[in-house]
Length: 225
Image (cartoon, rainbow, N blue to C red; front, side, top):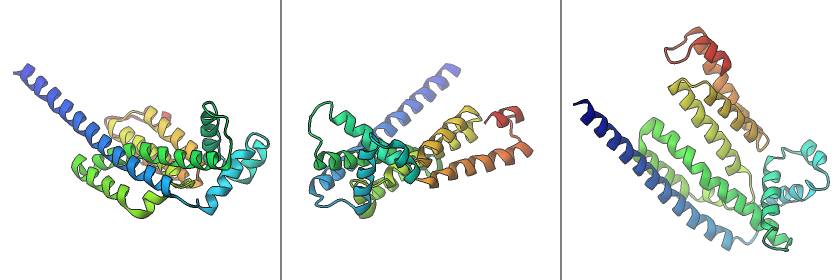
């Protein structure tokens, strides 16, 4: 009897995992098609995008100046991606920089769909989360920002990933997940300072639990978290 229950549980978990993978692949495919189309048809990038690219160019000659002037996270992503691109081509034209910046933003958008979907699944289930993320993908402004040289989606990537680990840490009682959430918040902070809100959310939850500990996390674990 117990063996049958275990087998049934494993089958259900496998089916759920398979459904989640299929949902994510469909979402990422749709977002990829829309993103590549928008990049190919973009005539002019945003004004802020041009300034991010200029900062990325300056990172090799004046990194300290760039860091003092503006959060360096997104320009650094552009700079690193451009270095990777130049391994396969000698071209370092303006268009190479532009397409690299747009590609970085689109890649961040595609990866961000994973924690966004899993966060939605945590609250409302996989089915509703799928439709919610699909709507987010096809909405004009999020799609446009996801194919421009802007830092909105890189910021959302770190914010969503950190928030997901906060949820997992709180539910499963694993203190080290709060460390990953803090790391995501720190990395996101150098993209956009608003990512510091993760530290506030996590800190408030831990503070409350220090006075009202649960069975899955004792006070020493909360202090470590």
